[in-house]
Image (cartoon, rainbow, N blue to C red; front, side, top):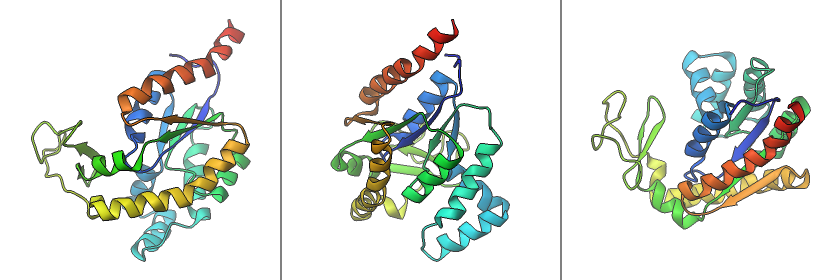
Length: 223
């Protein structure tokens, strides 16, 4: 689908909710640029940029990356695609970051994936990761072609320490505490759309239909 106007969206959801899969489908179907805060963070740390070094210092000390550092980092990438339609994944994570984004850009919609914690716990404890690229596999529904090895490089996969059951539940509760104010912020602005379910393939048609409805008036106006 070719967009007739600039469209900007944010996708939210706890770790393991299927954000990566849904993001890939949105960007492919609607031609949006995908901006992953995790990818940007890794790239800046690897390149040892000024912001990357600041972030690495926070991470090494077990701290969250400060809001202003994270916001500066994302805004730098957004300015480079000023006239593009985009989907941001992994940002904003606090109300302060949401306000920084709003001060620079108008967000058309915020897609929130609401997946039960028990479903996510099952997914994440079956998850294996290719650490250098961040590619993630799941032995239940997205297994690698060769068990234990990355499809692209053939390098070994590992199970991250934070994918153990107890750690997963702690991460999910921390996400809920941190992001509920962000969801409320966008809910109050009338741009939050929540999609609930236990399977990404069943959630996706609803997300797609919503975006088609959201974007169809722009097509009619141009015609």
